[in-house]
Length: 134
Image (cartoon, rainbow, N blue to C red; front, side, top):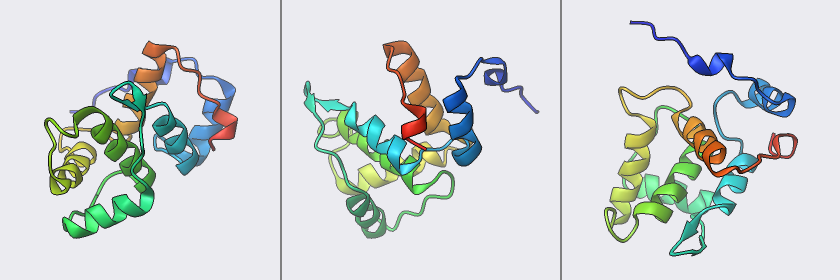
């Protein structure tokens, strides 16, 4: 069954349209850094998981991401770390598997992490500096 993407009808800022031309519904490294910079853990600014640590985490857990890109995975690992680490997720392998499950969800869709981020920004009133994050 082919479902319609209702976001096609959204009026998008020119900067966002330009961003999508280059990145599609995925994070650039700059956008991932911007998004991660907004995350908190325990009402404090998040000490982020770096790209190098993410790669090591995935490698050690023998986890391979099939959908999404490394910058998408970087956003997801930091979101999971901020929101679930220490309660639902207590081991690094669980963190790596969460990233895979989130991005490779069989009933998910291309750009799921990016779209979650957009929805969160819209709900919280966070302006995205599109031209700066391409």
